[in-house]
Length: 145
Image 1 (tube, rainbow, N blue to C red):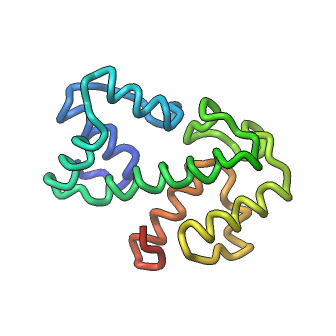
Image 2 (image 1 turned 90 degrees about the horizontal axis):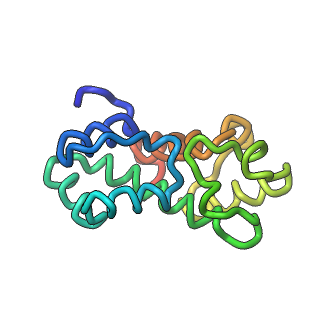
């Protein structure tokens, strides 16, 4: 696993260790857990194995996805779990307007205990953009997951 993209590393890790090929990008967070379960993979066991293999960053990546999912499932956004694919656009797929997005960014700031500069919020178009932004900030120590 020489790739630095955690999403690709995660899918490669699962494929190598469990002999399962999945495309996580198009899965909702709920479907990821269901896919693991239907293949007999316990989520907790998977995260432990990641740590044993020195893949702490993959565990962090899953934690970020999980926290973002919880923020978005807050009733004020009206988002259903089936809509939460990593490739989902906040505006096009989730139907959020500019006020919703401003509130969402504030919720992300509270969740991850870090201000998101206004110039950065415009770059966060999809859920994956947000995951990668927070992951990158965590890697340089600006956010503690």
